[in-house]
Image (cartoon, rainbow, N blue to C red):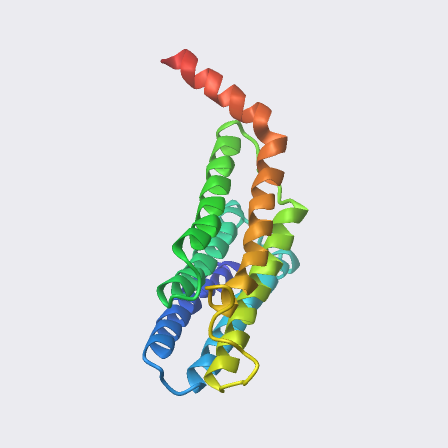
Length: 201
């Protein structure tokens, strides 16, 4: 394991700790200090995502494993954070499924491309989606912190949903757009794979 891969792997350590601290802190009404801990862990997750690729390129340690492991670590770490929001009752299950199914579909598309000897290139929408999801995470923490510190202007609900739901709705909408952006250019390849499969049967 090289340094870049180790940095990537850190996301799979920080994210579960985030979930444990957030769920326990939120549901049991512990000291607001847990929000600060979650913010630090979220920053470590984002920092790992930002620097692992740079480290790999600067040290000439780009590997096939790293190319696969990086997006998987991204997905697992973000899904873990979003699961903690769902378990805490901040976002509904159907909003979480938007994030879950997007990542699952993109992983399927990567497999389809790999089976044809192709590499699914990263698209601008994917990078924007990642940024918005990261911002959404800190947005949720900010809203929760304001509630915990009893900010008078922060309501408990907005139109029946937790205020942080509306924060996460923005990255969720763009996540849906990202699905279309990845799938549309590869429709021909998907159809080709389906035809080949039908012929084998």
